[in-house]
Image 1 (spheres, rainbow, N blue to C red):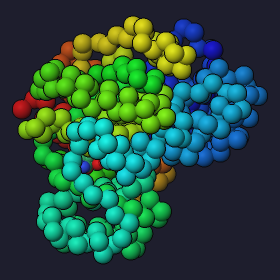
Image 2: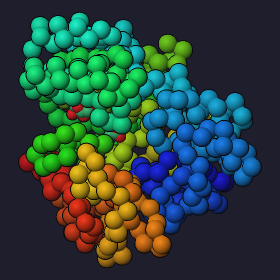
Image 3: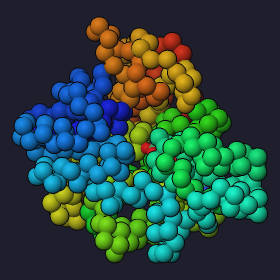
Image 4: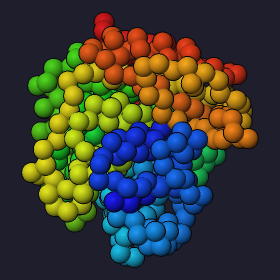
Length: 419
Ligand code: AMP
Ligand code: GLY
C-alpha cells in the first residue's frame, strides 16, 4: 500500500512512525514533512493548503490512502476535494470538521443535545460582549469563534484581562475573521483530560486517555501554547470518570453529528474538564492532537493502517484495537521565545546521543545536512516505561542529551499523575 500523510509536525511524524510498523505498507509520502519525517518517508514539497496539487499527486502516484493531520486543511474542506477526485482519504469532511472550526457551532450543538459543557453566550457585537463580561465578572473565558493556531482562548483571571481580550479579538482583529464572533464562557475548575477516538458516524472507539500541558512554564504558568508535553494513561483518574465522559459526552456528540446530517469520520478529539459535577466539554477537535498523538500512538499495539481502513470502510465497530498497559511521556523542546516570536535555523545537537526515547520532530528542517530549528515547538522526546515515573525518567534523560541555543522545556510534565 502507498500512503500520503499531510502535515509537517510532531503529530504527523508520530502517525508515520506508527504506520511504518505495518507490513502492508510499501511506501509513505509526506507533504510537506520535516527533517525527522524525511528519515521515514519521502517528503514532497506540496503545502497543506494546496488541495488540487495534493489530489493530483495522489492520483499520479497511485496513493491508496491520504491521511490528513492538521486542522486548517480539514476545516477548509480538503477531504471533500480529495473525495470528489476519487482519492481515498481518512479525515472528516468540511461539514463535520466544523466541530473544531467553529466554537459557536459546537457550543450550540452541545446545548441542543444537552451534552455537558460550560455555560456560555456568543456575541458578534463588541459592546454587548463587554456588557456581558461586566455582568458575569472574572474569572471568565473568552474564545475566538474560529481557528487561531491554539491561541484563540483567553482564560481571564480579571475583568481587565477579559476586556483586553475582547478588544484584541473583536476590535483589533488579531485573529482576523476567526474573531468576528466570540464565545464567552464560564470558568471551569478541575483536572483536564483529552480523549481521542476513532469515529465513523455513531461508532466511537476511544483511544487511551492523555493529558496535555498547555501553558509554556512549569506549574501551568505563562501563556497558552500548542502543548508543551503529554502523558498517557492517567493513573490518577478513575476509569469510571473516563467511562462517564465517553458515555455522556463523546458518544452523544458523535450521535448528534449524525442527526444533524454531519456524520463525523476520522479522529474526534474531546478536550474535557473533570469538574466536581462530573466531566464537561472544553472543546472538540476534528483530528489527532499534537502532542497527544505522540504518547497515544506509542501505546497502540494494533496496526494503525488497519484501523484507518476499517474506519473509512464501515468496519470500525468490529475492529479489535489493542493498547499496551505501559505508560508514555512526551516532553516538548521548544525554541526560546515561544509562544511569542522566536528565531529559526538554529543547529540542533545531540540527536544521535538519545538512548531510550523516540524523538518526534515538530519544527525542524535540514540545512546543508544539519538538522536545524524551524518552528516554535521543535522536538517531542517520547519514552515508554512500565509506569509513568519510568517513562518520565527516560524522556527527561534524553531531553537533556539534546541541545540548541535558546532551547526551553517544562520540567514538570506528568507530575500531576504522581502527586
Ligand atoms: P482550547 O483551545 O479550547 O483547548 O482551550 C485552551 C485551554 O484553555 C484549555 O486547554 C483549558 O486549559 C483552558 N480553558 C478553555 N475553556 C475553559 C473553561 N471554560 N474553563 C477553564 N479553562 C478553560
Ligand atoms: N494539544 C492540543 C491540540 O492538539 O489541540
